[in-house]
Length: 343
Image 1 (cartoon, rainbow, N blue to C red):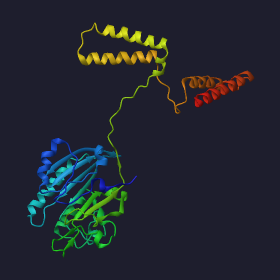
Image 2 (image 1 turned 90 degrees about the horizontal axis):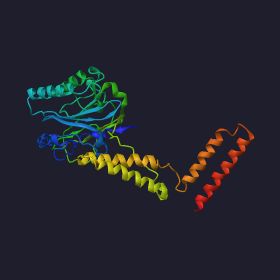
Image 3 (image 1 turned 45 degrees about the horizontal axis):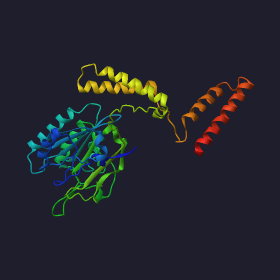
Image 4 (image 1 turned 30 degrees about the vertical axis):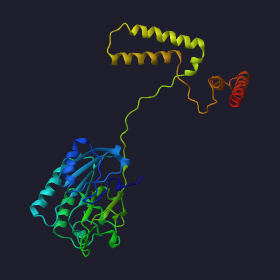
């Protein structure tokens, strides 16, 4: 099944944030939200979230349960061109350290605002890392991004397929005259064939209130929702309590066992567990389990006749008498079912 990357897509807006996290990291995230961006996660996969970890003022990761391997997605906000090269190197150093902590078997996805340009000219020099269809000309920050991607065997997913210009560029200058592709989604090179390249692009029609456009990738993944194990529910045959003899037997056994419990000095929790055990064990012994019925008119009497017919069926080819017994049992079942339906 194709799981669209919208499940953990980047919304590059300084005004709109939504993230599902534990209370332990809320304070850290609130500090980051004042100036940075974070992943947007759909509520449908909330049960798939293993952890959400702010790693610096420019990096935050989310780990998702999936098959065959879990997914770690790192959201980045690289320094703009106004910042010194030392700060850029510090950003990549922090990113390298963060990736080093990712479990080896996890599928790694690194996405966000890179403030880097990677054009078609990078394809021949960086095969496997950059695609043929970047926008513009590769700049110095773009070379640094390519170096990082190659070191971690990642590929720039939104440079792998040709798109019209509006579906390639990701950022628009305030004056409306400059348009660049500076936001990228990086995925492992070994999973390149899992990318739906035609659907991996910019979506300029998405109104996200930002000078950046929405960038999405469609990636073939199977998310694994963490489900809590449930105790099996017991269904006792309560219909038997309508029989006065069975009802009296059940009452007598319960009374005797409860009386014995009152002689033992236990705390409230222990007493509650003991009472539950008495009820369950007595119900199993006296009432038994309720038979599963598909139709409401399938009574216990019908089921008993079906059991007898099943026994005759096993031996029906043994003799003429056995065959006749099976036919009679079959007629009895049909007759009783008809009577039950008409009630």
